[in-house]
Length: 289
Ligand SMILES: NC(=O)c1ccc[n+]([C@@H]2O[C@H](COP(=O)([O-])OP(=O)(O)OC[C@H]3O[C@@H](n4cnc5c(N)ncnc54)[C@H](OP(=O)(O)O)[C@@H]3O)[C@@H](O)[C@H]2O)c1
Image 1 (cartoon, protein in one colour):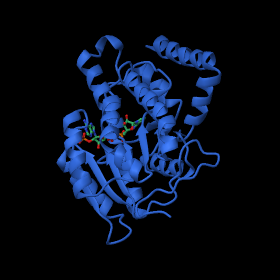
Image 2 (tube, protein in one colour):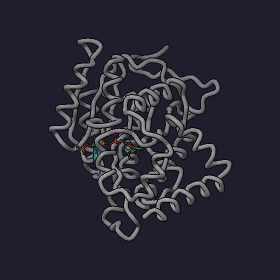
Image 3 (tube, helix red, strand yellow):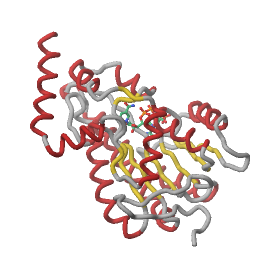
């Protein structure tokens, strides 16, 4: 028998648990006020979930909530926001504790908070590296630490958002890529621990996606980094959110929208060819400059 709010688990050929139904589920989305997180919040609002989004800026949270309201499926759904800086471990513990008490414990946790500030290694400060690690690696770790007992009780699901550069080290991303690889390591290690406990977990690795965050990323992007990104294509956040939802429904550990799955396989099985192609692309750009 399934209790209310429980995510039905199934194994089959999938490598993690499956989410069978989103209606009535409590979904926490960290980084839900913009881009991929917001598109996912809107999509889940239209599927009947109770959605609680977290981010730092109140004005962005309020306008995100308006967009979610416009997509709600029914009057009984709860759509809310809470302010949170996920780089602060103590704040995560406090805000998540309040969320569990006031909104209700989560069935699904999506960690989408993030940002990329690509540059040449020499131009990246220790502070930027430190912030990347805190935002991506520590951020995912802290929210999971705070919420796992509830997710386990409800046989829930976790999605950590990494990136193509979370499995493929790429020119210009020495801080961002390192922190997203850490997210991959955390998520892969947890997959094995959580499967027997019937908690699903996925890693989402989007390619370049047309979001406010991507717009900011492009402001100071080295031309070599831009050229490498273009080869994986540009997706819309709604497409990435759709892939994320389908990935959870299928119980896919690795969710690679667009051409990302192919890049992932290439990196795994023919890494020398991937490096050769990337080096050629970099040489081409540097010759032109
Ligand atoms: N767009 C891409 O091309 C792309 C590609 C691969 C991977 N990704 C990854 O996908 C995720 C979403 O990216 P996006 O492009 O959708 O970014 P976005 O539009 O800039 O949205 C980022 C979200 O994270 C929140 N956030 C940032 N720092 C935070 C913090 N310290 N604490 C809590 N919330 C914080 C932001 O709100 P506040 O700033 O108000 O806190 C916002 O809600 C990120 O993890 C990113 O690394 C993006």
